[in-house]
Each structure stands twice: as C-alpha cells, then as structure tokens.
Length: 427
Image (cartoon, rainbow, N blue to C red; front, side):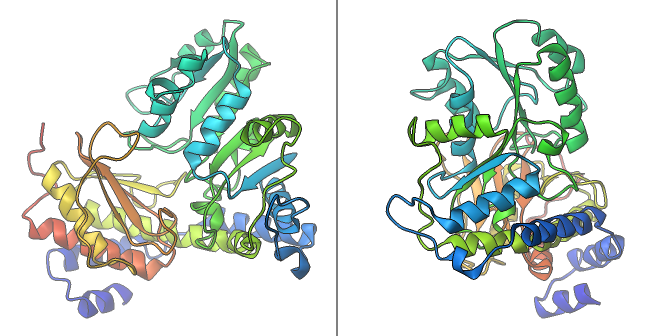
C-alpha cells in the first residue's frame, strides 16, 4: 500500500503511522465527480477556441495585439461562461484583482455590502483601514456577519438591500483565515437570487480565490456579475509565474480594465512577456492539478481527524475550495505543524518557518512554503495567524504523493511535541 511505503521510506513512527494507515483506507476510494466534469469542460473550451502554436509566443512592450493574452482570456471566458475575461501579469495578486474591481464598480457615495462576513485581513485593510482605502475615498461599506453555523444571513441581506445606494454585494467564496465553512456555488446562487429580487441594479462580485475548478460550476454560471482571483492558485496549474484575472459581464470587465490601466485604453495593452505558453498550458493542466490537491487535502483531513483534531471540511465531504482547516488549539502546535510541513518541501526544505508580521495582517502569521513559483498556493503550503482558535490552513499540493508526505511530516512534528487533539487549548 502506498502509505505503508511512504511511512517506511520516510521513517514515520507511531502514532502517526497507524493513524495514516486508517486515514488512507478512509479516502482511497473517494470519487471526484466534479473534476471529471471540469476536465471535460476545459478540454471542450480548448477545442472550441482552436489555439495555434503561433498564438503562444506573446509580446513585450505595450503588448498590443498579444495573441497569447487574447487566447488565454478567451479560454477563461469560455470556462467561466462569461462575455469577457481580463487576465494580466500586471494584476499581481488576488487582493489586487479584487480591490481594483471594487474601486471600478463602486463610485464614492455608493455602498458595498460584504455578505460573507468580515473579509480576510489584507482585503478588509484595503477596504477600511489602509491609507487610500476605499472608505477614505468615499465608498460606503457594510458587513453582514455570518450565522453561528457559518451560513449567510438571508433576512439580514434582504434588509440591507433596501437602500437605493447599494452598488455591489461582495462574496468571499473561501474561508480566508476565518473559522467558517467556504461557500458553495449553490450558496452563491441563493445570494444572487436575493440581490436580483431586492436590488436588481446592484452587482454581485465574487472573490473566487481557491475555488476555481473545484465544483462543476463557477459563480458566473449562476448569475454573478464578476469573479476575481489569482493565477498562481488553481487556474495557473502551477505553471503560471504570476498574475490575476477578472471574468464576467463585458461592461463590468471593461470598467475594471479602465481602472487597471487608463480610461480609453481598457484592456488593449498588457504584454505576456513570453509567458503566454505557461498560462495556456497551466490552464490545460489545471483540472488535473486541482484534483490532485483535493485528494491530498482529504488525506490530511482524515489523518488529523484520526489523531483527534477538529478538521473542516471532514474527509470525503463536499469541497468548495482547496483549503483545509485543522484546529490545532495552541501556538506551539501551529509552529510545529508549519515546520514539519516545511521539511517536505521541494524547495527550502531546510528552512524553519518563524512567525512574523505580514503586510495587511493584524496578527503575526507563520507560513510554510517551498514553491517553485513564489507564493503559489496551488503548490503545497500552509498559513496560520497566531490567534485563537489556532487553526492552520493547509492548501494546494500538485502531486498527491507529495501531499501525503507533507501531511505525514506535519503530523509527526505535532505529535513529537506531545500535542493531542484533546488537549486544553490556549485562550
């Protein structure tokens, strides 16, 4: 059995070895039917688009008429079922894509409603607190807390949509650093329905980071006006070197392009600098990479569940993103997890992660990563803010066997420290 072989090669001892054997049996026969649909959809998009080898060369300078960029964006529009997509190296992160979109779509004096509770730290900082934040430039802002069970508050959203000043409703699909479940496309469809009924002129803008290609449908298939995200997560297939994207209604995408570049220029420029081939090939491989990631996360969930730690999602549960939350309960266990995972990295395996300040985050954060593309969270990594309830967020993993080894190393490090899933947690 694969897990026995890996435990032997890497000298994994009990109790982790025994727990790993049980975990592997729990997940070995799981089916990933959504990924079968996604693979077919992506292949169909490629065959319908008719990409030529000559399209992949790309451009420099201003990037006018960059064929690689145009093909890549056309492929994204097909996959998302949208009128248009904008995908550029000059969008440097998911947060950049989101804030640019919010600024383009919400004029001063109009209101933004975050329906999925408090956004993740860096985004909320950009909306509310940082110099030149959206609030400082006249945007009005409300947050609707999620319910205790992590679902969105339907009556509260309906009540918030009464005003004439609502320009957009923002949905964060993934959990971020919050102890709440990620939202499904069905959840987003319900939000869209309420917005269309109560405020038909308001836009629904979805932070799609970590969620792309995980479910058979995307938020734009159920009526979202715009999705936004990073290309060094799911869609890049581990090959995209940088970049971000937006996709949705043509008029909304054009507004974002005008904000990103300049009014009148829109999306007409933006070189791919020779990376067009990596973008297109990464997108072709992305469904396979996402499936490998989901398999690895299910094993990690089963392993830490066997060791007594609360995990979300549970192994085998429906997944809506590529993030696995594991509640370790205290600071020491978080650090041990990150350092154990780091020892499994293909790059920088001999580094020892230390917590520290990260721009945009209130609390110190410990991160484990040894990716070939810096910061690429489709590659195996973890993040953990040092605050209660002391959850670590495991993400990515482009090769199933590597994800298994990473989980084994992290679990061994936690158990070597004497931690237990039933121990008293820090306050």
